[in-house]
Image 1 (cartoon, rainbow, N blue to C red):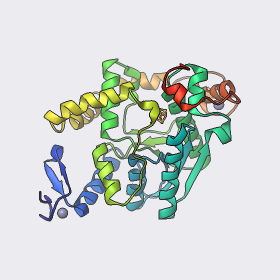
Image 2: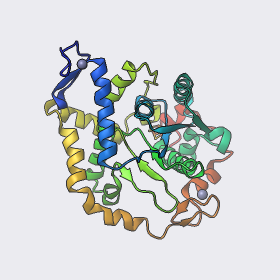
Image 3: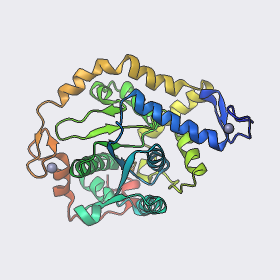
Image 4: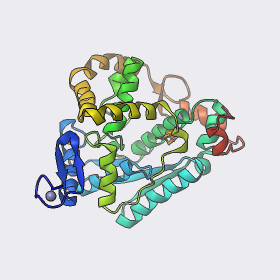
Length: 315
Ligand code: Q46
Ligand code: ZN
Ligand code: ZN
């Protein structure tokens, strides 16, 4: 297998691009794809400060590395979710990367700073862990970005993630979510600008990028995700992609080009009438935001071990 660019030995084949790359040209390919995503969707202007949401997985570490390589001033932020060994290993990977590259990393720990963790929140609220987890992460990253004066928040969602979320939103015709499923969400009262610079890269590509760049990422997936709908949608799309390379890319980018705009008025309307949370000032539809209500409910509850939540015994 030869590199499509230099004819040297290739280390990866990308069927949807009908190309093979050596390490040097694959790294360049990744940078070019991120540059194109940033340019096409006006994600980050030169000189803007970026807060990168870092989990310690391949996507967020590849994103941080790519943004720094492209010359952006990108600071990391990681949140200790308290999901047993998985969270410890995630934080360790984020810290190790930041230290090895001399990059600034902000750290929050849900248990130490807010008195709860995700398994306990899931058990007390009797909802799937990803519900309180996603909400907590969004709230804390938004708040940190605004407090720290960042221009934009960047997250490591890749093409596989976005295509799977799109499939879920289409299967259930979640029109409000469809209107918000864009790679660059503008800042609005109380919300920072949010961008997804990896939307043109697949998860196989972000993993290969990390290996070639010597980035140690946490390989295990979150134990709370096992068997969830998002993973089933990914598997379904992978099966289609295997027979027709490029399908995921077409599904997502043709949606952006031809359909997303139709749903935006509905998404915008859902944001009307937001006021500031009486406790923390974050935008909310009620008097107190969902994060403050969650903290009030779960703070001080006896910690629930990960295994109990995973096995469903507390749900
Ligand atoms: S960390 Fe949190 Fe994810 Fe784990 S509990 Fe769900 S949302 S799966 S990206
Ligand atoms: Zn090459
Ligand atoms: Zn609040």
